[in-house]
Image (cartoon, rainbow, N blue to C red):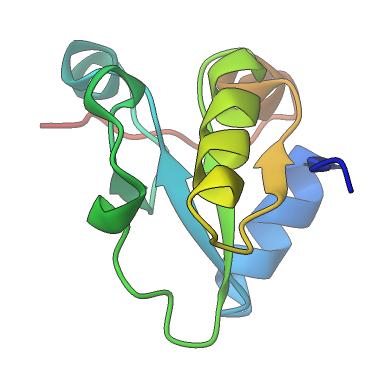
Length: 108
């Protein structure tokens, strides 16, 4: 059975995080995150991606995010290959997030 990655819209992700249903995992690099970060979430850079580095979502569903939605798919497939059920990502990434008018914060 092929692994699937489910697209979520910025509004779906924002709402899911606010309701405590999603754990956002940002797979961008630290310099990108420092320049502009999602207002919540954990950073697990794709360049050194280790699915085991993702914190226990404690009942939440993991949603991967990046800048444009490409690296988040790669991360999701890598996590699935490692046997984790993480099959959701933010379609369009940070670009779509900002286009939807959602807030960002300075990282670091």
